[in-house]
Image (cartoon, rainbow, N blue to C red; front, side, top):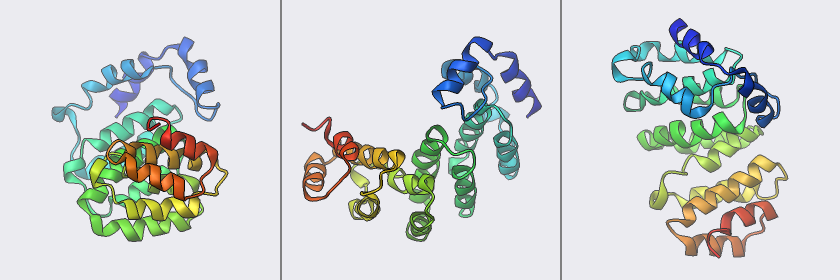
Length: 218
């Protein structure tokens, strides 16, 4: 872990820090490593030969999550994703903890679309109880995760489930909810544009959601 921290900080660019911080609405500090450079620095640490044993993954992930610079949260997510074939049923509790800690779209969308998305394919019996709790939580990031975890499911998207998330959230004026509704519909529209167009026509959505949903369909 210390080697990662040292290497990241050695590659930080002070000229990038303020720009990156401003892009994230000044919510987080940055070392100043842009994504392509960060992936190059991370490559050796994320290679199969360098990965720690699976029983160490969550203590390490949380340790990186607690560091102040945002690049370490990105590294933590990428590290965790390397263990997708070893995912265990209780990992959803860890994903939830990450979603509600230091929450912003840049981490939540990866956790929802990549980590939780794979998890729910592995443990489909956990979808209903987990998303029911997330929807009822009042936490916009957990609700956004309900909308987005099927992003990569394509034709296997459960449209009835997606609809059950969209309808109760459709009147929300929260930007990140309205945007996610449109994004989820737009992605599924690549597989079934007719369904998306019909859904948009038959339901009242925020203008942002509707615009995002159909902008590649008309």
